[in-house]
Length: 238
Image 1 (cartoon, rainbow, N blue to C red):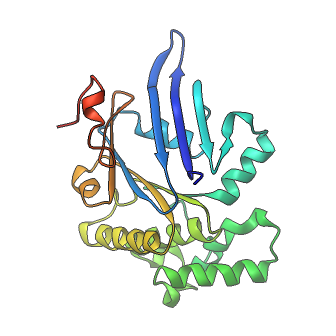
Image 2: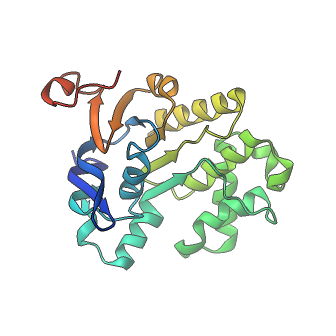
C-alpha cells in the first residue's frame, strides 16, 4: 500500500547560522488514518505542518504525498498537488465576509476548471455533509464560531482531497463548539478521509486514534509504535 504521507529523515533549518526547526523526522500516514501531532509551542509542529502541506520544502530528507516526492515536483505540479490532494483547516477561519457560505465553499474549487453552477452544487453538498444545509445563504458574520469552522471544513473537503490537515481547529472555539468540530472530523474520518490534526492540546490528542508527539524538532513518541521511545534516546513525552 502506498502511504498518503511519508517523511524520511526530514530536517528544516532557517537562518545563518542555521537554526534547526526539525531534526530528522520519520513519519508514515496510511490511507484512512486519523493522526494527532501534539507538542508544545516551539516544538516544530507548524514547521512540520508546512512541509506536509507542501507550503515549504525540507532542507534535507524526503517528503512524499501519495507517492510523489515533493522535492522532484515543479512549482506547477506542486500547486496542483496542493490544490487537488490536500485540504487545509486552520484555527482562523479565513472566510470572506462579503460572500455567502455556499460561495465561500465554492471558492475552494475556483482553480479546478469547473463551471460556477457545478462549483456551487458541490459546495452545497459539502455544506450538507457538515450539517449546514440550513445556512447556505448566510454570511459568516451571521454564524457562530463553530458554524464558521464547519464552513471552513466544508471548503477544505469540497475538492475531496486525499489528505485533510487541521491546524488547531478547535483553538479559537468554546468547548461545546470545539466538541462539535471534533465529532465532525471523526465522522469524516469514518467515511474515509485521512486526517492529520496539529494541536498543543494533549487532552484532545489522547482522544484520537493515533498520537505522535513532537518536541524540539524530533518525534519522541508514536502510539502506533509502542516501542518507539525505547529505540530513541530522547524518550517519551511525559
